[in-house]
Length: 233
Length: 227
Image 1 (cartoon, rainbow over the protein chains, first blue to last red):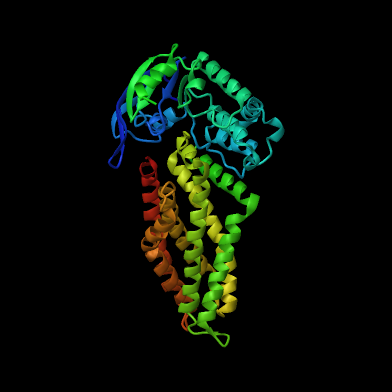
Image 2: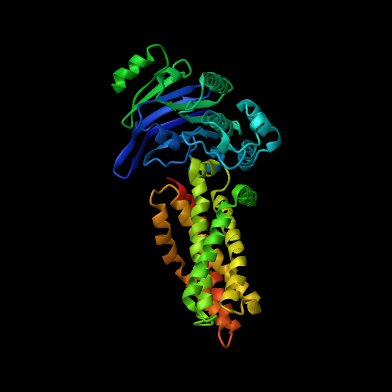
């Protein structure tokens, strides 16, 4: 049984690493169909927030609710509805693209027959499916990692700098994919410091600075100006 | 789902290993080198200086040293690309992931022991094959105990920068009972008056250690792995 949800809510979430405060009392709520851009400079706390939303990092205080349930209530059921593309790609370089996807499909309880082929097709890696991932370029690995994260059709899609290493056409393809996922009912949260790529893709913008949420508004024109005013860089 | 996850992790680790045989070859090479170095010190004119304690000690020291190397390398693979986080993110039971990694390490150490035992029997003229059954009991229970603790610590340290230093510092004190049980149990089989009951007693103690630490590891793996 999976715990499906329509909304993810972070309430007064903080996370400290020793004496360092990575995230301080952040609150926001994201629903189906939204693409939330978590923007901020390096070290702002975006990746820690993504880690907490993915249930991999426990908040020091505050709660994250997935449609009213917390990861403590229904860990595996909630994890089954989360897809994460982190800065590290979570792929085994020694295995082929096919073997990687097959392993993760089975780990999520999926029959690999159909989903693996479709994912390879979507990543444009059909002809390299039996090559070791270590022989792939960064862009190819990034596309494969995105497919790995989306194999199980997650409700909550978390992406940490998903455009790293992608060429222009791949960036367009990934952007289109994310828009389509949102239109199909996924909750997409995208952490990036690249304002140009976020502009036009996200439907809402949350700006993080020094671990604090300094702005949470619908996306619109003048993103760069707003960001510069709030972040000062 | 639990057993399926265990098998999936074992199968995946095996698929990675057969691409290069990197961990198996380095572990075997290290274990063999260990035995050879000890043989230079403890064999005089084709005779070991002690017929029970020396072969027994060399066997278990080689297992402990080679085991540390194997456990560290197994988790180094999960550190690269942070795949350990991908395993923890999956809806599979997290203790099953631990057990999958443990089974892989145990199988690797069994393969190492399959080479070490005849080698030590030959070099140290130890009648290890005469006592194959009780010796197998000691090796199986001792290896499981050593690997149980090692796998848990290696998983905990996978994101630590000081993991190479911390793993032996944590592992060896906790596995001293395993090494004492293994050495004394094996030595009891190799003396002038071999004693199977003494070896069986040590096997029982090692089995109790295994039960306690496997239970503890399965229970604590999830909270210990949560950041």
